Length: 57
Image (cartoon, rainbow, N blue to C red; front, side, top):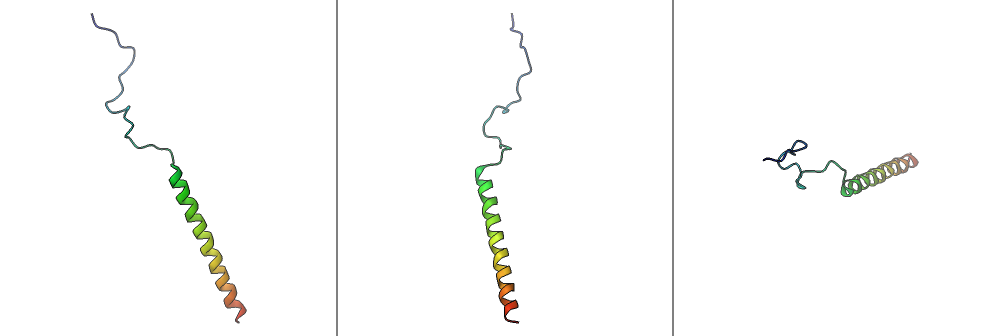
């Protein structure tokens, strides 16, 4: 006699840990923070250059 299965079987490879995760990694947050810091520093440098140019007028 065969045993009765209680539910559907998972698809082949569904339990594999090699599939990509949809969670955001710590490295992605670090790169976003670094990009933000660089952008803010560039903006302040631009403002400083403009202010320096205005004072020469």
